Image (cartoon, rainbow, N blue to C red):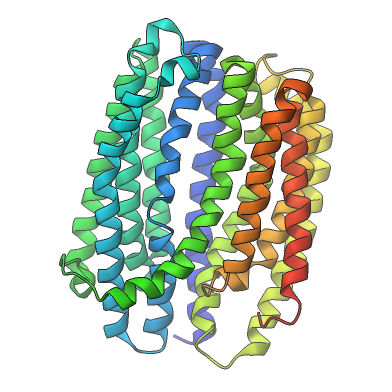
Length: 431
C-alpha cells in the first residue's frame, strides 16, 4: 500500500469513526432535553446535568497522558522505534492507573465535606441520592481515564477509530440507560449505577480483545523510568489545559448557572449550547481524523505535503464555518422552539452569541491542528486556559446582572481572543 493510500485509509476510517461519534452526541443531546424534561421535569433534569458535570473535572486527572502518549508512540513507530513506544506505553499505563484508583476515594471525601444537594438546589426527592450518584459517576470518570491509556495503544497501531467508536458507544448505551431508568421511575443513583456497569463491560471487553492481538503493548505494571514520565508530563500537562478549559466554559458555567439562576435555567443553557455546538462537532470529525496523519508526517522530510494538507484544512474550515453561521442564525430560533416544545423561547440573543463564538472556536481549533498533532501545543493550551478561567470568573459577576446571556458574551470573548493569540503565536513556526 502506498503512503498516500495509507494516509487516505487512515483519514477515512478516522473520519467515519468521528462521524459516528458526533452522530451519537447529536442524537442523544437532541433527544435528551425533550425526553428527560418530560420524564423527570426541568428542575430534576437540570439538577442531574449539574451533578453529572462535576465528575467531569476528574477526567483531567491523567494530565492528558493518554493523548500525549498515543501521539508519542505513533511518531516512534513511524520512525521504527517500537522499544521506545513500548516504554512510553508502560509509563502511561502506570501513571494513569495510579491516578484512576484514587478518584473514587477522593470523590467520596469531597462529597462528604461539601453539601452538594444544597449548593446545586437539588429537589428534595432526589437530594438523598446526590452523594452516591456523584461517587458512582466519579468511578465512571476513573474508568474513562484508564480507557485513555488503552486508546493510546490503539492509536499507535492505526486503530484510533476503534477507540472513538467504543467511547461513543459507551455514551449511547449510557443515554439509553438514563432514559430507561427515568421511564421506570428511577432516580439519580439507579442511572449512575447502570452507567458504571455498562461501561465496565464495554471497556473491559475491548481491552481483552486488543491485548490478545497486541501483546507487546500489554501493561505489565512495571515501574517506568521516571525520566520518561517527566518527559511526558510537560506536554501532557499542557494538553490537559484544553480539557480544563472546556470544563471551565461548559461544566463550570453549568454549575454557576444552576447555583445562580436555578436548575431550570440550566436546561435553557444546555439546549442552546447543544444546538450551537453542532458546527464544532462537524469540524472535529475532520480535524481529529487528520491528526494521526500529521503525527506520522512529522518524522519525514515532507514540508510541502504538510503545508498542502494544512491549507486545504483551513480553506475547508472557513467555508464550513460560514455555512454553519448562516444556517444557525436563520433556522436556529425556529428549530429551538420546535425541538424544546416551547420550553426554550425568547433566548435568541444567547443563540446568536454562542453561534458566533463557535465560528471563532472552529478557526483557532483548525489553525492549531499541526501543533496539537505533534505535541507542540503548550503555548496555545496555556493561553486557552487563562482565557477560559477569566471567562468563568466573569460569569460569577455577570450572571446576576445579565442573566443567562452572560454565558454567551463570555464565551464569545474567550474564542475571539483565542483566535488572535493563535495567529500571533503561529508567526514563524513550522507547521
